[in-house]
Length: 148
Image (cartoon, rainbow, N blue to C red; front, side):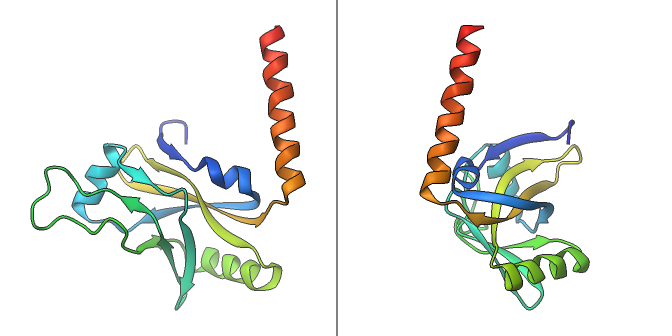
């Protein structure tokens, strides 16, 4: 992932969830969608993933319409299919059913071949006291950096 250009991070995901496993999946996109992604016209802070018929779909991701798109422009909030192997899908499905995990998008990037990829994570929601502890740790590390 060193040559990949990370475009967008989902900051809410790391604040609200504790992740155990992470997967990198491809996205099935239309032409105007990838152009909008390269222009950073994406918001997926409230998006999530669901499993239908052994396929994983990303819901709630807003890719704004491409400015120079014509009548063939895409719908901003449509469901997008994620490309994962059957083995990975079965592993994800098993953890969601047995351990009550949520499947949340973490990062969106374009790899060196020009394909849009999304990093998704299996995580459990954090409690309020866990969130306060994270904020406290960030403040402590910020003060240490300022003192140095």
